[in-house]
Each structure stands twice: as C-alpha cells, then as structure tokens.
Length: 302
Ligand SMILES: C[S@@+](CC[C@H](N)C(=O)[O-])C[C@H]1O[C@@H](n2cnc3c(N)ncnc32)[C@H](O)[C@@H]1O
Image 1 (cartoon, rainbow, N blue to C red):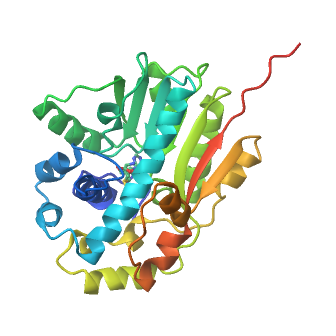
Image 2 (image 1 turned 135 degrees about the vertical axis):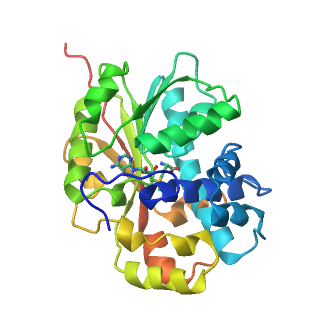
C-alpha cells in the first residue's frame, strides 16, 4: 500500500510501472506499423534485470496481452510525441516531462535547436535511467536537465534552480502519472503548473475517469496473466482512487482551452485498430481520457 513520502527504484512499487511501460514501448517499436519508435525502451528493460519483463520482450508478440499493451501504450506515447511536436512547431522551446520514468523523448525526438527539456522523477528511477543512457553513450537531442525529486514535494523550486524560465511558454506532460498521486497532490501539481506557465504554454496528460473495476481487474491479472509481468503489478496497491477534479474542468475554470480524446478517437486519429479488449479491462482502457490543455496567448493591451 502507498504511504506519504514512499520511495521506489525501477523494479519496485510505482517504479516498476515505468519499466512495464518501457517494455510495452519496446514491443510496439518492433511492430511493422509501429506508432512510435523508441530504441531505448528494450535497453532499459534488459538492464533492469527484471526477469518477467525481459522475458516478455522475447515472447510471441501476438499474445493478446502483448498486443493490448503495445497498442494502448503505442497510442498513448504517440499522443504525447505529437504534443511536443506541435508545441515545437509553434515555437515553444521549453519542455517539462513530469514523472519522466524511462521516457527517452529528450533523445529520440527531433527537437528544434535551442530547446531545453527538464525531466522530473524520483531519485532512484533517474539514477537507473542515467546509468543505462551512459552505458550506451546516448546523446540527448536537446539540452536536458534531470531533476531528482518527489512530485509531492516543492518541485517548482528545484525546476527554477535548474534554469527553467517561467517567462517562456512551456510544453508540459504528465503521462501515466495522475492515479499515482493522492487527489490533494494532483491539485497542488495543477496549481504549480498553472503558476509556472507563461501564456502559450500547454499541458498534455492522461486521466482515468472510472476505476470501478480495479478489484476485478487485479484479480483477473493475477489469475489469468500468471507468468507475465502484468500479473506482478497490482494497481490496487499503487493507485489512489479518491475523488479529484477532471483536468479539463480544473484548467478550463482557469481560462485554459481543453481538448479531451478517448482511446477510440486516438485509434482513429493514428490509424491503428484496437485489438479485442477483454471485458474486464474495458472500463479502464475505454474510460481513459487523453487531455491537452493550453493557456491562451493574451493579446497585448493597446
Ligand atoms: C507509469 S510510469 C510513467 C512513466 C513515463 N511517464 C512513461 O509514460 O513512460 C509512472 C511514473 O511516475 C513516477 N511517479 C509517480 N509518482 C511520483 C512522485 N510522487 N514523484 C515522482 N515521480 C513519481 C514514477 O516514478 C514513474 O516513473
């Protein structure tokens, strides 16, 4: 169960979810019609020494759960890739990846010259990431600052200390983060993002509107997916299910524009049919929302 101020490394608690997502990105990257290409994902999984995740990469990718994971994470990753691409095309040169985990976008996206990417996550997650990237002599495609901090703490001070410019528009992401924060911490995170966002900033995130089937899903995973890494991650122990504001409502009330898409809409947008979704996962997967909010550029006063 989660506790205030709990910590983890890449193979434990919430850290292992970052590894699971990387494994799914590795599977997706091998598909002939891959939605994203992440050559670092498999390297992270192998370096973690996590037996189940590593085995998963070498198993038959036609398995139902592999198809489901690679398509869902592929669609999600593509949505966030496009968010950064669109921001870059609009002249935004500052990016903040909240809960970066093993996100390798600083290395794999084509950032315009002069872009700075800040990545925030817990210390042991970022230590592992740095070790693997160093072992592969990886060179970021933008100026990159990794900030080891808990997102329930005063992370804006650390971000500002690292050279973040609150006067410049920012492209933020919080991918796969919100259910791991208590409602009050989510609220504080939104307030901090809003306060640090110059006009023209935008934030992309995913949110779960309905976690009713979490118990059923966890039982299904433990029984039916035995022997796969999905059986080892019990989301009931990691997610907070307390009430909280929908991001589009929270930011909308503060004058930001909001767009919210479902998995089906992402599937249509990126031309990838959804695999059959076992009924037990329907509420979670089909209820997920991919949200982009933007702080309008205010017209200069006359
Ligand atoms: C499901 S993973 C997503 C990682 C990455 N965004 C991606 O999509 O590949 C969740 C991430 O959130 C991070 N995280 C969750 N709660 C956090 C907190 N309170 N402080 C810092 N990082 C946190 C975890 O360490 C983990 O890397």
